[in-house]
Image (cartoon, rainbow over all chains, first blue to last red; front, side):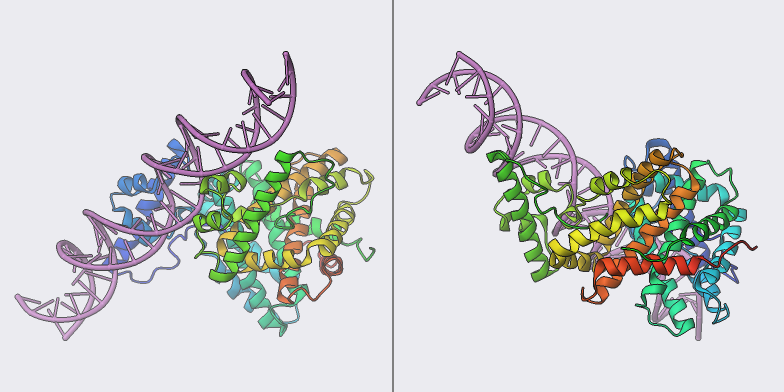
Length: 211
Length: 211
DNA sequence: CTCTTTTTTGAGAGTTACTTTCATTTGATG
DNA sequence: CATCAAATGAAAGTAACTCTCAAAAAAGAG
């Protein structure tokens, strides 16, 4: 999902020297950026400063991150999520599949990167530009998830039901994450998300049709 | 909600000459912008071109629209929505209040501005920068709606249930609108949204707890 | 109508994110 | 070592957005 974690080396096999250098540079840029964001704020920090602090040229910065926002929002979980969704039984209800795909991800994130995730979500909450990009990532994730589910269930990717359900779950998810930030990360994130889904079940159960 | 319509003169009483001029300028800029977007695409159109086509200076452009994206995304419906939510009975279920507040808005939009809404949503769908801003507006709307509902029901604005439900409804709403664009606006938007809510009710009804 | 006050506008210069190009370096490979 | 491909840096360019200040236009009072 949007704005999760910056990949804790996803099972590296045998990185060549070049790869290792690339990874190191990437992380050097990122941590320099976070340091500066903390010191002077996001907007007040220019890309040139980040590049200088990481000891690379500005052009190198943009080679690693297409935009300044991408330093914060790099989503490495979408493919995992799509894969998880593909492997669910074809006749499982959509929401249940989503739950089963999301919760393990949250657990992994919670165990491995809690501090950094919190840091990142705080920026998402505070900086409009980042919130905006988060929204875009959301839309992209939504498309991918809908695509995966459509394929699995043989429906069209334009199917109203699919899209609405996925959109709703992601919308609820985002709010759950923001709530988590509001509590300063004291709550248990996966448990929070589980609760969120239960809430939705309770709320929507009474709706039929009206107008 | 985010990215709806550019206000069809919301019950104008007696605009002074100054006001009238302002409105005219605003619309001149907007229609010039839409014309150019159609001709050359959004990204290829610079603010200077828009200003020139509308016969104002670039500085004037930015006085009317803080960013280029705001030409497309100007939300005049949030206050109406909040007002509608305040006037609902205090013990009404949250989702029902949302439905009752949203549907009339969609009807109004559908009757008054269908063509322009469609035009706008097409840009939302196609242009990443606009989609991003749409996401941000979404978040802002979400906050406002949560705030209104929190006040009405005496809950905290940080209340998990409230936030998750509102987030989910807005997420579903957005997808419904995008679906509407996919059908080229042939569907009836309010009916679509009503259907979306019904779908959610059906989907979430089966969830309880697991893990 | 005239003078004063306030608002709107335009011109221009400045900042910064982001792009593009090209020459140089540096790690990989036979 | 020699050759090839990839990573880097320097530098110039674009366009969105900001800021300042002075001119023009409207509102209001005498």
